[in-house]
Image (cartoon, rainbow, N blue to C red):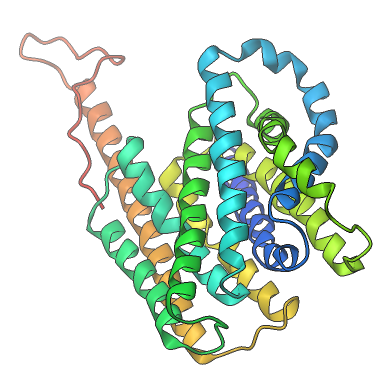
Amino acid sequence: MAAQRSSLARDLWIYAGLFFGMAFFGSGTPAAKIVTERFPLLFAPFARLALAGVLTLPVLFILRRDLKCMTRKDWLLVSIIGAVGLVVFSLLQLYGMTMVNGVVGAVIMSMSPAAMAVGASLFMPDKLGWRKIVAVICAVAGVLIINLSGKAIQATGWTLVFGSLLVFGAVCSQTAYSLLAKRISKDVNPVIIVPLAAWVAVILLAVPGLWQATQFDFTTPSANEWFALAWRGIGPFAIGTSIWFYSLQKVKASTASGFMGAMPASALVLSYIWLGDKYHLVHMVGFGLVFVSIGLVVWAHRIMEAQMQQQQDQASEESDEPTHDGTQHAAGAPARPPHPASG
């Protein structure tokens, strides 16, 4: 009983980390809308990642021994995370948010759970069953409802379409960001990825970012706009990503995909509060379909885990059964159980 309570408490702690990590990350969507309206689009990601890199330097110092455990593969993965998960993500999101409002951006970012589920099935040992396929369809349908409604989205025609595609590209970059982090060696503390990836991104953005800085009037942004820029480095990345990476290493990618719904949820709420975007019922219809997709992903994963546990129990029982010559199967070498049915 005590062991079960300890396991439950540990799981709840991990699930809370996944939820709040994505909630912090989602706050970056409305902040991106504010940033794009005032700051140069190459200077903004450079500044926020440089701030995050400086703030996470103590983490790099504390975990410096983990650097010795990193293989060449780990360093390559960190470099790709910095380039694709940070630089490409930031540019796609910022340019996309210049064409759509915060609500549209939040709903498109709601496709993250389905995108994560698809990515896990393609690049990780997770199967994509009918439930996850339906989840993807629901996520896409929710986004289409928002984009085709024409209500309070502040954009029409190809501007809306292209902006939505850019934000969706950011979703794909973020998915790669999480899946690549899962491939880092188990001996390396996942939190150390944050400062390392940040400095990779800072180096890549240094030249264009500093060039735009020389042509920018730093007296024009308001306090709220400076706060939005700073928050994009502190909240979504330094805090949110650190919590997310730490918790992500404790679960499968398909489990984590269900918790990614916290990101667009926080983005949508902050779009109403921070940006003053208007509320329309059609937004809830589209967003509701996206949450149905999240529920299906979680449901599929729970079924898969139950099947795997049942097969492990069955294999354990078979290992204890006597063979035809009166001996027993070796406990450490049970017969290989069948693959669980995909959900």
